[in-house]
Amino acid sequence: MPRLLASALSLRRDPRLLKLPPYLSLLCIVIGVVWLFLLPLDDYSRRTYISENALLPGQVHTYFGGSDQNVFRAYKHETDELAGKGNIEVNDKLESIAKGLGLKVGRQNFTYSSAGNTHSGQNIYAILQAPRGDATEAIVLVAAWKNVKGELNRSGVPLVLTLARYFKRWSLWSKDIIFLFTPDSIAGPQAWVDAYHDAHDSSRVASLPLKSGALQGAIALDYTRETRFQSVHIVYDGVNGQLPNLDLINSVNHVAGGQMGMGVAIQEMWKHSNSYHDRLQTMLRGMLKQGLGLASGPHSSFIPYHVDAVTLQPFGEGWQDEMAIGRVIEGTFRSLNNLLEHLHQSFFFYLLMQRERFVSIGTYLPSAMLVAANFTIMAIALWVKSGQPDVQEIITEKTKTAEEAERIVSPNPHVASERDLFLPLVLVAVCQFLGVVPLYLFNHLSESALIPAFVLFSVLSSILPFLLSNLLHTSTTSTTTQQYHLIRSFSLLLLGMFLSSLATLNFSLAFFVGVFSAPLTFVRPCPNSSTLKWLSMVVLYVLSPTTVVLVASMLPGLDEKVGCGLGEVLRQAAFAWDVTGTYTPVVVWCVWWPAWIVGVVSVLGRPGAGDKKVKKA
Image 1 (tube, helix red, strand yellow):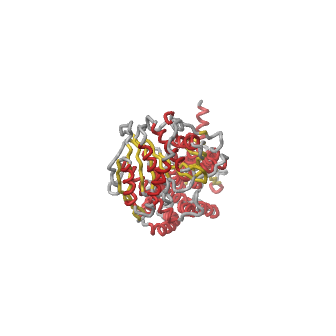
Image 2 (tube, helix red, strand yellow; image 1 turned 90 degrees about the vertical axis):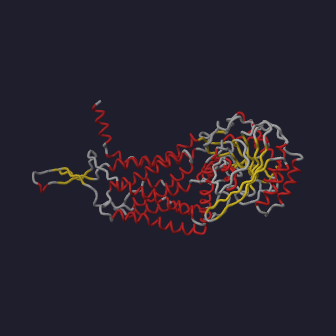
Image 3 (cartoon, one colour; image 1 turned 120 degrees about the horizontal axis):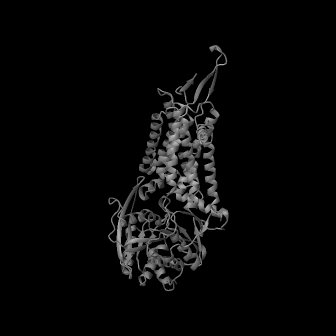
């Protein structure tokens, strides 16, 4: 036993162990990325299924159609005349129609300010009280006047009015049904759902004059086309990467694809062959949207309040008409009407790679966790290394005379060194707090000043590491190798901690930031190799947050042929921060950017005369 203990202690002090962490970190990154690319395979993904038995999707006969087609045409004729008119005039007409159906009607004004622009409007909604309910639960049907692209919801609004008239005739509803009409697809729904849950800012958003019970689900209809369609596109991405309960998506898919016989698509994959390539592309599209954390439709504002919601978009050229999508909504509402409790049995964390194929959090989470763990492994290794002296001088006498003594320099792992923590802690803390500057600027400047501010910040961000490095080098006490180890250790420890925590909330954002930050694990001061130093600098500047944002603004979107431009990206980010509460800018500027600054400072480091030497005669 004593021998075993002695062997363990000697192994712990073996300096060769400190050569392993960089390889372990690299292994974690490689395994994490490979893990992600294995998910589309059948062995790692599963078929979707209904967990909540009470839903019974597709088990009822839908009756929407026939004479309702004429009602739809009449409402469409009336709404077409409102095209180009103001929000108040449109709501006046919608209110008269809703009151004519015997529904209670309420209005709500809202005003948001973002990037120097004012986003104001008025929501209108009508409540159908359940004949068999007590106003304790409700389902919402949303039709925005304009979708996220600014297109008129020409068929969506009259179809919702037709459904309101149709639902009014039925006595089977056990939950109230709320018909919500908003002037746009993001600000309007956000203002309404905030006020519904009394979480609104009364200076910007008015309270609701009418309310019903707890919201059990919501369906939004984005129907801009006026011709027949082939399939329905389900949009389910929420704010900050939150997702609705998978049972809701499966129910819509079952009703539309199974009962109605129409095609179903997700993530704008209009044609899906169920091949590995298409599965991977669908998954990566979903991860990109989840990582950005932006609202993708009127449904996105409901999900943060644990109200499961999706948006339906008809697409393609086919033989399906307005009555078909109406029956899909009717069948979905009939399923939600069966619920005895809130949807909870199925998954809230998942990646869809085909309408009937998914992976759950237990399968995909290790991918991001491994990428985040590589930073923690290197941080611990640097902490241990900082406790060991760099060099010691061992004098071996080969003769009795001092003139013939030979000096041999070798490391001594048995000698502990006191850590100087003040400078590393101050530098890392300063870099972390500096992240508040771009976070504040890009969310409070006017739209016209966003691009000049970004260019100026990018230049200053490129210069700042050089200034900090010179400051460390010209300080009274030169920065030692130990202090550079501690600077990197603290920065990587924070980065690994932030990303591992974020991975459980927004897997995609944590994964992407972790991959872009991966070089920070391996950079180090290179005072004796200018080639290695400048090669490291090039890699870090190519993968800097400002460069990634700039390049991303030039790339085409999922359904666009050209990039939306830097100004539009910054404007959308500011709007998402001010209106929907997207926290992606916090991760970029307060987590990723400070770690990048510290990484560049480390590469520029010049450990100097401050290194201590322990002499042993």
